[in-house]
Image 1: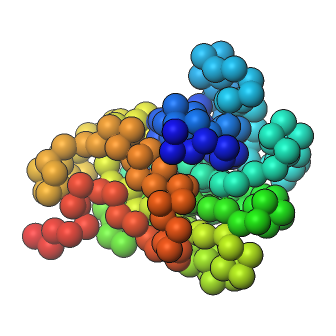
Image 2: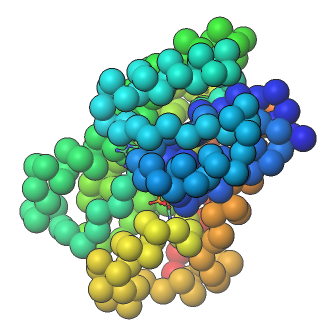
Image 3: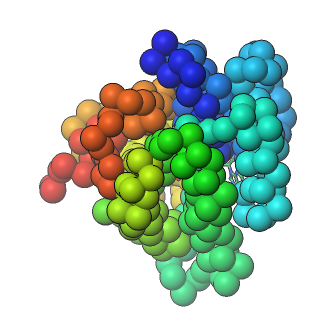
Length: 253
Ligand SMILES: NC(=O)c1ccc[n+]([C@@H]2O[C@H](COP(=O)([O-])OP(=O)(O)OC[C@H]3O[C@@H](n4cnc5c(N)ncnc54)[C@H](O)[C@@H]3O)[C@@H](O)[C@H]2O)c1
């Protein structure tokens, strides 16, 4: 039971990587509070667990009131918090910068960056009160290298890495570790929808062959890496941007 006694707040927990992370943490003994959109899927997830182990609360984390309500609820249910995993995100594709509307730009910043800022701002006092903790922010390989047509996404994911490093420095004094994860291609709705909207992998000039591990990841393979950063096994890891990408960024040509 790697996470016995740990209380973890997971955003985007109803689907994909967030869901796989919530399931992995709960299976290894954590108490998990999931927050995010996709309330029906969240309900189905929560129905499989005792309330003392995994709860899901439908929340639009671009709304400060929803962030506050979710963080108050986790504190009331679990009496504190030891870790935060920011998984919620969106992946708008297929537009060069001139084609991006103000509305689309602002929405991507709101979900992929400002929501992380707000969730961290609201949860840091709880982590400090617990004597320290771990924050894991899900970025992407797009922070370091990108594909055509995703300007807002690439910008937000690079910003998540910068924010994570900054937090690592500012909160080491409170024994709070902060790391980002540069995730490669994972078989979730986001990847499959994104590819479809862009006309498929071939239209984007993409092939999964260049991965050193030539396949798309299963969400559980990202969850176990996130789990390492949540766990005390990573007690000396902070300020890092950990690649979990099957070797994608390692390849030059
Ligand atoms: N799938 C990939 O290949 C891949 C690659 C790199 C990074 N990522 C990142 O992993 C994270 C999870 O994505 P995923 O692949 O599991 O896709 P997904 O679409 O299954 O998950 C995204 C989650 O974010 C939630 N969400 C979206 N807007 C929200 C909002 N306003 N408030 C609260 N929750 C909101 C959704 O409800 C959903 O549960 C994202 O940050 C994504 O950028 C994914």
